[in-house]
Image 1 (cartoon, rainbow, N blue to C red):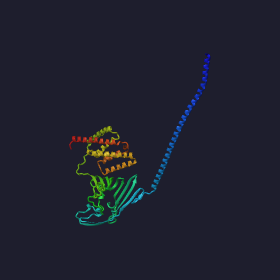
Image 2: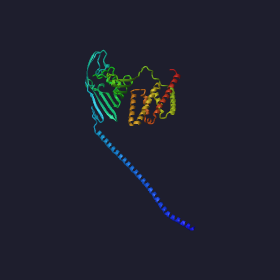
Image 3: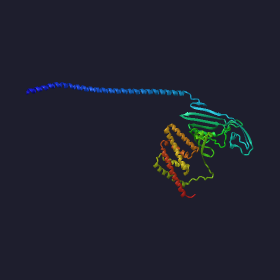
Image 4: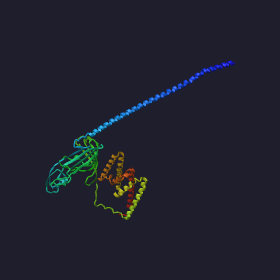
Length: 481
């Protein structure tokens, strides 16, 4: 029994001796395979990184090539532009068909020398020497006084005419100028027909045109020079003909084929103190309005607004100034109204716009004598003045210095309309007062123009209602006149 146990133990020892070296050899082999797997994975990762780096390098090279190509193209374009600019600078401006050129301005001179010989027979009198009636046909100068007949013969060269025309371009805008004068209408101071026959130059037309705008002196917009008949006489048919040259500001806008709209304020002598002209030129009429014939190749439709001021020498004298007691009463009422508006206005508006109501009260009281019928024109003028000050700021913010120039031109045009009393409901003393105050730099750059306009209107309603109510109370309870 012991021998069998001993033999079994010896067998187990022999078997373990044979198995142990295999297990010892198996562990190193598995470690090598794991390391090989890791090396292969790292090598694959390195290959991927290398491929990505190569792709990125290729993309960077492509971008660099594209940038270099664009830079080369830009340099070529810059060189071509430089060559074109140099060619333009070295190439002289084209010579105009008429006249000559100075820089960018085409200049033309023209006119004519005219010797006039007239022989006139008058059956009822004689026209004075050196008067316009001796130079050309004026119906109002024909003598009808039953005086002895007369026969006059005259020679003169004072109807000779000269003109200068300028045509240029400024910042993409067409700028033109025109000056025309003769020696007919100015009285001569250098002599008379018996000595030197000297005559002074007389201005006929002088204006500047900027695109569609005309500034200067020209034939009035209401006149249609195309209707003047062909005549050797200096004036032509004067009966029933509008014949006026005057300072003006005119806007001309093409509205269709052969049709132009002209709008301009104007002024005339006579008794007319306010005038506004609207003119439409249409040609040809047949194709424009389909009349079916060419019997009227050109037509002018004009409209004019005129206001007359009538004065009466027997009108009532100006009311006497109030006495000391009445003056104190009026002062008290004014103080109450001012404090009331200050309290109400402070609740509604800022301190910077509160002055609108006070400024309107000052104008209405001092220039309009607190007449309620003048309040609408006062309010309208105040709003126009505020709008004129606002548009300068707005155009400057939108267009820079060009906007400032445009805004100032609009302001100048408005002042001109007020000077000639055109559209007095809008362009009046109230407009100029509010424009002067609202355009002050310290106000113009800080004030809220919308709030200022509202404050002015509300102040007008407040003061107008208060003053009119006080007038009614005074008329009812005051002593009878």
